[in-house]
Length: 626
Image (tube, rainbow, N blue to C red):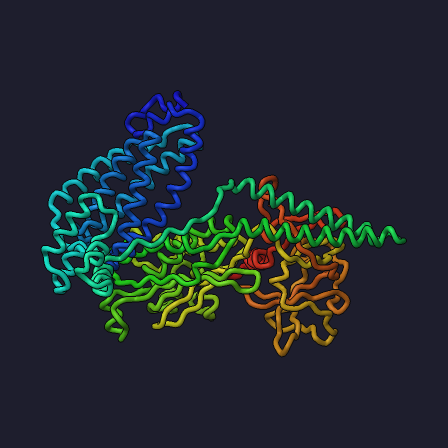
């Protein structure tokens, strides 16, 4: 460690870390993780304080956080972080004592403190991971020095603006309940060592009734918000790699149990029945264990949602727009891996709504709307998926503007008929943007295609609903977990494949008259009073066909962002929970394949990404896809 810090360490404030014993380095690792979480929560509290600068409960909570950070930084000899926490604590101490009322300037100082503290914490994380100091660590250190000086200058010019709660004795005197001399005698008794409160002393002396003291206390409480009682939470930090290893082990148990049960069903006799009964119990227990491990991996999406409050605040001000940011469904739980990867796509969608969706106050008033727009971030469970929506009440997608840009970029012909669905898909094309000029927020066309690519990697989907003049809904559908899915095993040219059950509307064996050929559409299936395009999986997967007549095979009716369609397979082999094995560590990513699994028989089956496979085939055919 010493060698890693030999150059430039002094300029980063991390030089003392090199001398920490191994036990303290473990404490440093815990401090890094806890600080990352607390800083995210603190930012949320600061934004709440901006809405209500007199909220003493929030001020007390912020003070405690920075006070604790200062103490930990001192113990770990993180001098720069300690100075930053100390000066920020001073500002909060002024506020809680009534010497400072937060305004735009002081809120900005608090937010900058958070940014700098987060940067210093990132330095610690990089050091713990790589044993080296980040290249920009010195710059962060210098910025802290400038910021500390700025806080000191600000506090030097601050004036008291908030009166602290009145003493109980003063309230009683003002109410005429006691004489000033009586209060003076009671205070003298307190100073002499009496353990009783002022009100108790006055009641014991017969100077005032308990009811009068109670009324005075109620008035005092109304002047100050009492800090919330801290809830004790029993928790332990676990490395996600351990959870992944545990999940893999549980998955192997499920596979082994399924294989053993299959062998047992092929046996005969009393012992075979007893063995099957025992294996069914093992199956029940392994499923329970699987559910427990899955539960450990699940986290509420609220913290991820709330971290965007700052981004919305800063971006809307930069754009000159007034925005009310609303979060709904923050208790919705997702796999930790999914939550870690969804942040960037959500940020792009929020940026898109702020820049392209919501109007300026003047534009909104001219359109008969309120000056302040609303941007809602919403999450909810739907079946085995989670739906995340970014909803705005802006002007919606301007069809003519999108179409003109698409024609200019050569994505569609000038005389081509383009449906609303195709218009929405165009927005996800790489490099597509309707912005007139490049800004810090948008205009380079690298936003929505990034969203689609990232969501596809999570085996999810993204689509848009919009009504011009009313607003838009940008919707992401994600699996609850990336580890296990409920799968339908189908046979295609004799090979087993897994189709996610959630994608299947129905599986049927059609009648010959249900299959027709339509000019311009090709083969279609007549299903529940509508015609669905029919595709043959053996063609999509490059296999020699075994079943070519749909009425002799099985047809899966599936539905996703691209709509409903029918897929021909040879047969259904069964349904089972499958543990997803990632192929990308050893193989090049294949379009339409999301992973692999081991079946009960012990053979490997590929898991189909039906939407990815459809998009790939459409792109190969020259169609516009999302």
